[in-house]
Structures are given as structure tokens and as C-alpha cells.
Image 1 (cartoon, one colour):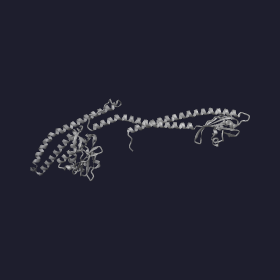
Image 2: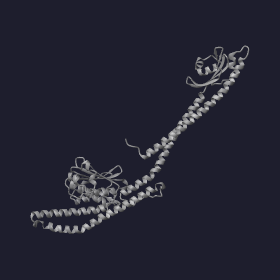
Image 3: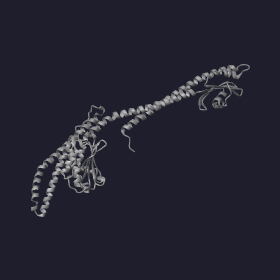
Image 4: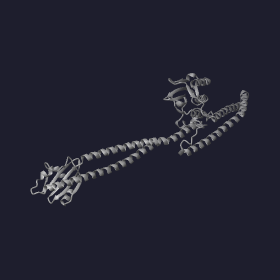
Length: 452
């Protein structure tokens, strides 16, 4: 399972944190409000019950008391029901409801039988209520049931509101997390952009330490690292260029001497003629190697892009190599003019076509296509293809061995495909080798739209 990104984790952390805090505050607020409202309701109802008890006691403290008129004189409102226990029977303002009498808690009735007033919260059916009991004499007691439907409804509304507030707070926390993570990731995105530019050959890319004071140390260290890397690459480039340049003079002398020997080869005995042929081939290969090294020495420079007719260059290279120009095709809705470095793209095409000729049984197609917003260049050959184990290593420097041997021979400098990768990287593109349908290899280059 793919691990969530840093931005997603920060956003989730803010959301969960906000939800936990808001839920805790909502629960605490609900409990305190519920306790306050219930206590206030109990005090109010208790005062009313004690007032009713005084009225009932006065109404029964006569020579011939009438219970029903006394109960009907009570102002119990719509939420309270009064029950009078007198001489072993229950009385109410109307017909005695057995449901009410059965709902009287034993604990309240026990306290009343002991001469103490009592109260308990119960549920009668699905309605919450408070049951009060007040002793009025040895065989007389007043019980009142105070229904709390309105208070219960208010508490439910309060709970719903607090739940919505908690959910809203969690959403707000997530939004704050998104904003905070974006603010935190913005400097890292700047670092990533600078690193991408440097990888593409723009060694002048730097970070501004003043942009984010908290990341000033990172920016300074990054810039110092780039300075050291740039200096080292420049030293390596100069070394390769100087060595290659110094080799050119003796190589020219060797090449001239080899050409003289080659012209007189038919005058030598067989063994000398064979040796002469080997010398000529190796001198030529040595010249190619020096040329490639010089090209590699300057391949880390940024691409000098301009509008270039890539299809025309491909056809010209095919003519130079005796290949039919019909190999080059441009897919419909694809412009043959790309915004690229002419020198680099020409060498990329030349190296891929030469690689197909030398190791892939010959080039069979050069295509310019579009894949979504990408410009795509493909070169197909009809050789044995490239094994999956070699598809990454084949673009490294001086890699021939198994990769080249599987595709033909071990001739060449081992730098052609490395140069292709370098030039494509300078354009912020990618290069890969795939299987060609029907057999062979397909070298595929993709360049981003901003480079085209």
C-alpha cells in the first residue's frame, strides 16, 4: 500500500487534532450545560412541588376532606402530573393511570415511607421525567411526575449543534493543515525546482536564503553544495577537454601515418597487411573516442534551444548513411519543428541511427509523434532487442559488453548512448529502450511541452 505524502499526513494530522480538541470541548460543554439545566429544572420543579404539598396539606386538614377537589385545585400545568397516596389508595385529578403508579421508583417511595422527601430521574415510556415524593402524614403522601420533553429536545438540539461545530472545526483544521503544509512545502518545492534545473545542466540555479529565514541554513548549504559540484564538474570537464585536445595532435600524426600504410597495404605480406588493417581500424576508433569525449566534456552545458525541423535533420542523416528518407515519418497533428538545441538533437539522431546500424540490424523507422502533451521521437531497429536487465545500464558510459554483444558486436566507443542520455537530459526529457512490435528494439525519447 502506497504511503500517503507529507502534505496529506500534515492535513490529516491537523484535521484529527482539531476533531479531537473540538470533540472534547463539545462533550465537556454538553455535560456542563446538561448538568446545569437539569439542576435548574430540578430546583424549579421542587419549589413547585413543595408549594403543591402545602396546598394539599391545608386542603386535607379539615374535618371532612375531599381529595379530588383538593387535587384539582393544583396548578400543575401541562408537564406535571400529581398523584396522592391517601389511606391506602392513589388519587389523581382524573382517572388513576396505572402506568404512572407503576413508574414510581421504589427508592422514592421508600424515602417517603421513612418521612423524607425524595426525587429521582426516570423514563416513562420514551419520555424523560423527574419523580418527586413528599410525605404529608402517616398514610398520606404527594407524588408529582414532571415530564422533561421540552428540556430533552433542547438538549438534543444542543448535542446536534455541538456535533456540527466539531465537524466544522475538523474541516477548518483540515483546511488549515492544507494551508500550513503548502506553506511548509513551498520552500521544499523551490529546492526541488532548483535541483531539477541543476540536473538539467543549469548550474547557475541557486536558492535565496532571505526568502525563508527558517530555512536559511538549508539554502546556504544547498548553494555551497552546488558551488562545489559546479567547480568539480568544471574541473572534470576541463580535464576531459584538455586530455582530448592534447590527444588530437598525436592522433592526427598517427592517422596520417596509418593512411599511408593503408594505401600501400597491397605491397605488404599477408601478416603485415593484416596488422596494418588493425592499426588503421584502432586509430579510427581512437579518433571517434576522442571526439565523443570532447562532446561529453561539454554536454553538461544548458541546451541552446531554438526552432528546429527535426524531421529534415533525420532525413538528411538517413541520406548521408545511404538509408531511404522514407524511414522518417511524422504523425498527423504533430509538428516537425521542435524547440530544441540543433547540435544536440542532431547528434542524438545520428547516434541512434548509427547504433541501429551497428548493433540492431539496421534502422527501420524514425518517427515523430505526440503522446498527450509530450513530443516523442522513436527509432526502431530489427535486431535482437535489448534484454530488460540491460535497459538501464545501456545508457551508461563505456557500456558495451553483454548489451552490445547481444545486439551484434563489441565495436564502438561505448559513449554513443551515454551522449544520447546526456543530451536528452539537457532538454529535461527522458529516453528509454522498449521492445519493438514484431521484434527488435525501439529507442523512445520524450520531451516535455515547455521545451517544444
